[in-house]
Amino acid sequence: MDTIFNPLVGGLLIGMATVIYLLSLGKVIGISGILSQLLFSKERLLPFLFIAGLIIGGSAYGVLTEQTVAFPETRSPLLLIVSGLLVGYGTRLGSGCTSGHGVCGISRLSPRSLVATLIFMTTAIITVSILN
Amino acid sequence: MFAFITFFCGLLFGLGLAFSEMTNPAVVLGFLDLFGNWNPSLIIVMVSAIAVGMIGYFIKGKRLTPLFANKWQVPSLRQIDRKLVIGSALFGIGWGISGYCPGPGLTALVNNPNEGIYFIIALIIGSGAHHIQTRIVKM
Image (cartoon, rainbow over all chains, first blue to last red; front, side, top):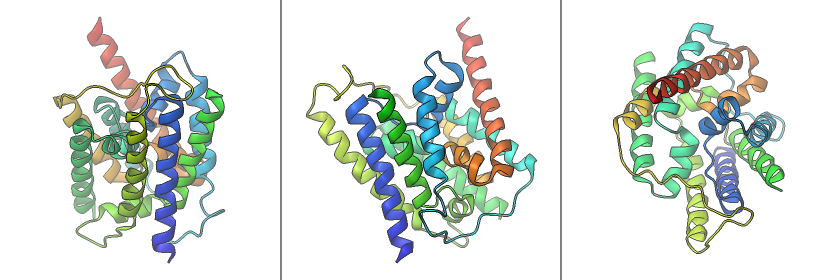
């Protein structure tokens, strides 16, 4: 039951966050974009508040919900650094990540986001199958 | 009002990541492992989030302005260019290496700090490199 219930509730919450943000503030939720605003723009308060909320909500893991899969054993810093560099550079060059392109972009049927999502899903699936 | 809604949406989004276990890279890697031991649960997350999102864009189409702002700031670019393709391809490779995309990477700072710290510092350096690159190109 949890295998359907938890992802369903999770997806609905993510969807509600994007809809409330859109209809009240007029903006699209893109985590990579909000993070780069926090780092590189002059308007820092709002991105800070969003990311603070995100981290607080995201750490409710295992408190509000039953954890069904164990966290991986801590992996090597090198692997995490290579991954972080690619994610940081790639999401800025491609103007979005899983939230901006994958959720918001597909919701509004943006052709750019549909293409971006197909590409990053494909390269991610290929990468995982090579590394496994 | 702006500040409160922004914080609240971040909180809801984070709770969504937690409930769907996207905060756990093992779950994400299981979802991306299409040709191995595949865990399809994140399809439910994507589909339900997008379904709710579509309702939002439907309502948007019927309104001239947002509730608390005077204009819509939705991206208007439609052209599929090299940057979009290469950037998304690189992002996917990075995502597949660790199972972290930006949101779950940020929550890992609390959930799994031994990993989160390396990932997020590198992510900041990666986005900084792009930021500097675009400034140099502009000059």
